Image 1 (tube, rainbow, N blue to C red):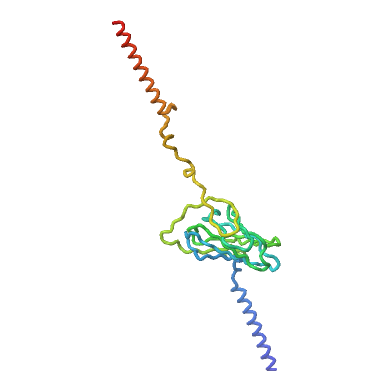
Image 2 (cartoon, helix red, strand yellow):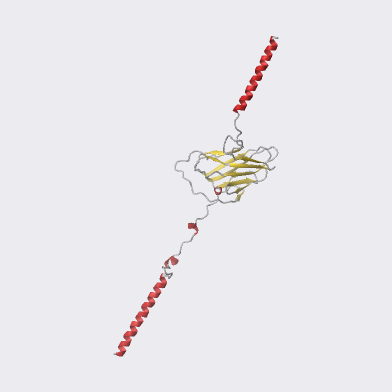
Length: 244
C-alpha cells in the first residue's frame, strides 16, 4: 500500500513537471524568424559599391522558388542596383520601386540565394527589403511586415554609422532593364548642360542687337553711308570748279 501511494505521488510529480515544461516552452517561444535573410560585409551607412546577399528560405517540399520581388527601401534607387549572382538561369529586372529576380525553379525544398550590388547605401540605421517569394505551384509568401515580431517580417539589414567624412553621392535616375550576371548600375542620364553644345567662335562673333540685325550688317551700312557721302562731296566740288 505504501509503495502504491509512493508510485502515485511520483507519477503526479512527473505530470506536473511535464506540464510546467510545456508551458515554459510556449511562454518563451519568440516570433518566427524571417524566412528571407539579408547580410553584407559592408553594412555601413553611405558605404559605396556594397554587395548585399539574400537567402530566401524554402517553405515547400513539393515546389521550388521561381521568383523574388523586392521593394527597395527609401534612399536606394532601382537604377543604382546591379545584379550580382543568383541561381542558374535567373535574370534581373529593375522596376519603378525595386527589382525582380526570376528564372527556372530551384530544387524543391532548397533555398534561393542571390546577391545585388548597390551603388551607395543611404544614411540610415537599418534597411527593410520587402519581399514577395513565389513558388512553381503559384504560392507566394509575402515577407513585408516592418514589425520584426510579426508573422511575416521583411528582411532587415542593420547598418553601422557612416565613416567620418563620408558623403552621399548624386543619385541615379530611375531606369528599368534586364541582366543575367554581374554588372554595374546604370549611369545617370546626361544633364541639359552636358547635352547642349556650346556656340562656335564664329557664331559668337555674329551677335544680334535689339532690332534683329547683326553687328556685321551694321558695319556694312556704315561703310555704304561713308562712300555715298564722299561721292556727293566730290561731285559738289567738281561742279563748283567747272562754274569758276
